[in-house]
Image 1 (cartoon, rainbow, N blue to C red):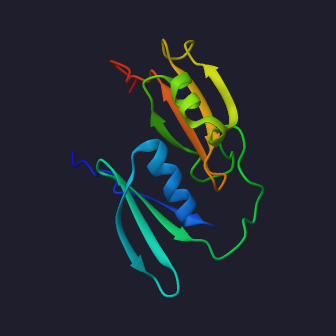
Image 2: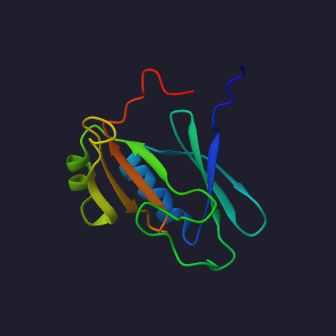
Amino acid sequence: MVVFPISHVAISCKNPIQVEKFYTKYFGFKRARVYSTGPDQVVMIKSGNTYLELFKSTKELPVPKSEGSGQDYPGWKHICFLVDDLEVKLNEMGEDAKISLGPTDMSAFIPNMKVCWIEDPEGNIVELNQGYVDEENPPG
C-alpha cells in the first residue's frame, strides 16, 4: 500500500501573523516560506514534516464559531498535538490557553490519556493530548 503523508493543513485567518506567532511559540513551528497570492501573502510554517499554510481570510465566518471539541457539522473538527504533560503545557500557555472543553480524563477509553481543547487566536479548536497510544490489534 502506498503511504501519502500529510503535507499541510491550510487555515484562513483574520490575522495570519498572530496565528503564526501562536503556533510558533507553543508548538515549535517555524516560518518556511512566504509567497504572494495577489494583495496578500501566504505564510507557510513548519514543524517536522508538517506545515500549516496561513491565508488571509476574505470573508466573515458564515456559521457560529466552533466550541467544545470542535464543530459537529461536516468538515474538519480540530487539529491535535501530542504533549508530554497536559498540565505543564496548559501552565506554559497561561492566558493564551483559551479552554473550550476540559481538561478531561479519557482513561476509560485509553489508559492514562488526558485531553483538553483550546482555541487558537482565530477560534480554531486545538486538542492537546497526553497519553494517546495506538491500539495493538484494532478491529478490522
